[in-house]
Image (cartoon, rainbow, N blue to C red; front, side):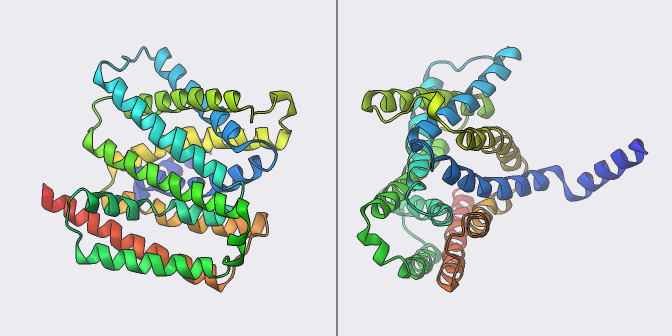
Length: 310
């Protein structure tokens, strides 16, 4: 019986393809991490949560590679790891976690999907020409964002809401810079080990900041619900999902591997409405769909320009 079940499962995996299953895993579970972050930061400082999450995730990665006796980075590889640690984890992950304390998880996820827009804008200011498809995609995404925020116009009178939007947008900007820097400095080091080092180093920097500013709380005062949120974020957000993401990235065409970025916000918005009772109305549904359509067009344009460059 066990052999039959094992054979059935393995044949199903072979039909679907392990990289596609990895992408499905990423698409769903990265969407759920917004919910876990929202629950966790209700009961503790957001930056402290980000620091603990990244410390534990980085520790697990580094422990594994120490056990495997993997070679450590050398020379300029450390420079790349430190810069990406600051851009992707200290700033991007830290700020997005901080932002979701003041805005809904669904809104945070939609803002988090705007990275391709920043990539296009940054490359434009670097002197690269924008394709017509990129410009149209940006205009469509902007119109979608306007629709989403139509119901939130009065919320902008609330200082905490404005702050949440500001830091969430800033987090997407730093991730865009990290994305462009990663492409510029093609990976010459084990990406999984590099990821663990980036997480660990970022946690030290955030711990230093929270300690110096006095915004952290004693570990004994962190409630169980926040610890469960951290555990979920470490296992699914920092370890399993990143492994699946890098695997999918290495084994699927770029056109397919970016699909996760359109599914994550949908998962976050739906779960936010179900679990937290967050607003899910026509403005969010239509505006979110229009925004994601524009982002798809921008991403498609970026891929076409990369192919021309080869």
